[in-house]
Structures are given as structure tokens and as C-alpha cells.
Length: 161
Image (cartoon, rainbow, N blue to C red):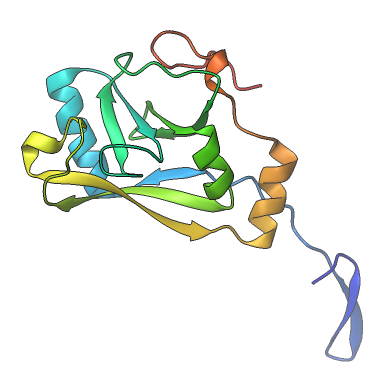
């Protein structure tokens, strides 16, 4: 409903005001994925994800030891899951997925890629939902997420603003 549109309530005219919403996270993880991330981090140390559209399981999120996958200027930081685990996506893939909130989940079965969970008999997958118009507007106001050319060797961005 537009800001300031009159609405009748109990014979009175009221103005309905739209509440501004904060930009939603672009990336989430299910509790099962967070538990597996914690388990893998306990064995391997700090982790990172990269979501590409290329080889090895297509567009499956790949989990790496942080710093073993070099991000570059064509990678976009979606955010962090499970506390401090950064999730990157290739810029071309980001253009396809920018209108969706991505959730990392885990399912039984072994993927064909190089992701750290492969020996565990499970694999990470993504699920998504389309942002609402209000969420999309909030994200547009917030601006695009940082690119990999702002990241250090471990794939960390010092400041996102």
C-alpha cells in the first residue's frame, strides 16, 4: 500500500504509513548446514564457501579451507553464515541470483566436487526464495555487496562500507 494512502477505520480516515525495512541477508544456512560447518571447521580450521556456475556439481556451493580458494574481482561477497564463514559467488552467477535469498542446506549423498564435506557422505546444496518488493527495494538502497578485489588473501573484506 502506498505511503500516505487514506484508509477508513471505524468511520475515521487514517493515513497508512509503510515502514521502511532493513535489507535482508542475501545468504542464510539451515541449522543442519551450520552444524556441519562447525564440524568441518573443528577439523580444518576457518572455512569459506564459493558458489559458482561452472564445473564440479554445477552450481553447488563449494566449501574450502579459508584462503585455499582465491577470490578475485569477479567474485561477490553474499555475506557470512555460521558466524564468520564468508560466502562468495561468481559475479555472473550473482546477476542471476541477485533477486533471491540463498540458503545453504545439507543433504545425504556425495557430490562430485572438491568441497570439504564430500568424505562425510553428505553435500551442501542451495535453496532460494525470491525477495519481496520491499526487500528488493531495501537491498537496492543498501547497494551491491563488496567484490573480491576488496578481499585479502583469506577472502576477508576489511570493511563493507
